[in-house]
Length: 266
Image 1: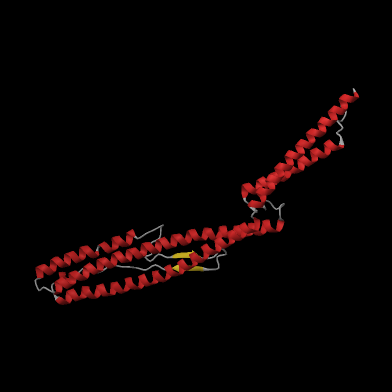
Image 2 (image 1 turned 180 degrees about the horizontal axis):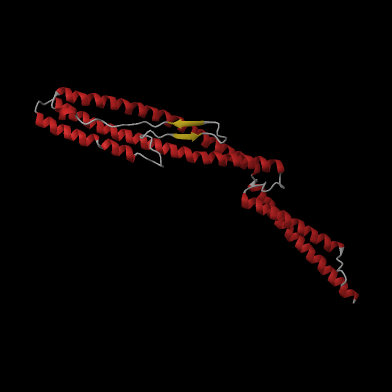
């Protein structure tokens, strides 16, 4: 089968149409993705620099998940301490009532209430467990704060413990004061734990805010490296569409001219 020979003008017109189509495809892709650099072929340096920045941002975002879990555990422990402090406050009120009376039956009844009340402490401790960790049961959490693992902090838990049952059902004033002393010691442990958790919460919040900001900076930087000028691309696409129409019209005229010439030769 013999080859089809095209006139040079027709060949030029087809080449122009093909070039315009290729340029339109590039502009359409940029408008669809919002990026001027979509592959390494577009710009090797910008593509790999942006990829590295996006990868680091993704690693930092993964760290934020563990930080959020640690914050949740800290909040649960802090709320647990608040609940226990409420129990201690009520228990103090019972000791005050017991000291205000000399009736042994009344004191015994108050001692029974004291025992029932302080038994709730252990239940609050158990219920403060979040995501498999209970900071009120002497468990700890290690939080990684940067993507290469060189910065870490450990949140140490505390042992809340229990309060002993009223000695001698508070029959004597000495018995009652023993419970008062126990409440004082217990409160000190709670206050120390609350202070420690507050410090850890502040540290983690600062690092969380920093990591979030750093991740956003990296993502923005990567985007700016590869971003397309949407207005320019839209204008370029319109110009290319016009060129395509003109090239198609020119090619049609060329073909019409060739056909006319052939008819004259017949």
